[in-house]
Image (cartoon, rainbow, N blue to C red; front, side, top):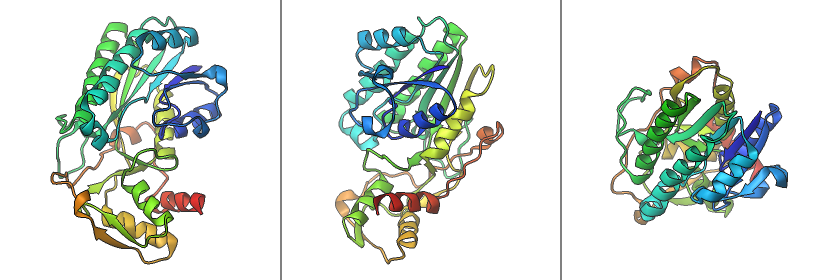
Length: 304
């Protein structure tokens, strides 16, 4: 099965691409390398397209040349502070870029499935685990751009009848992180030798899901037959506070790590909870296997 992964050289793509290759998929990657790296993946040059999804003509040329059976659309600008600082770029990439992908793949005769990476940022603030049936009400430009992408994918399904999966990613962690989210920021400071690290808000809790578990979820969803249009949450189903993440690093290092609250890093508005109800995904046979300690140990082993 010819499978095109947009953003395949990025953080999550670097976990998805090798797993799909291992499963026998003929994987092609389209990426502009603005955040990713060719070093993250092992793809031949004739299977790699250095292309920006905002370039409609280049996207169309690549897709019509590949003629994919499956498209996994991961390419996006997804670091929320960057999106807030560059709202036009974020909207242009995440909305117009997605439109370009969808317009191009409508011309592919043998396309069987579309997978669209959305986000938990489509949900408003809840103090409970959110299921796919919870109301969507984004709080930022990133969530809004991804919710728009979901609607575009719904329209694509209605126009074509091609199986379309929307998967709402919660907080990813693992190797090859390219944005300064919490875990890579803690890792960076510890790698520099600090044992009193500077962080912002300490109480917010997030549902951290390892990229290897995410890749397995993508594989599981792609294997589903006659799925129509459907939406799935992808998280671990467990919340961890900032303090608990730091404590996990301390356990794996077997060293004391202290936190200094840096006021410059404190966000004035911050949701306290973001937890996935992943019952729906588990019902089709997926189970996460990477706990927070195992994932952090893997990161430390790699940089040690």
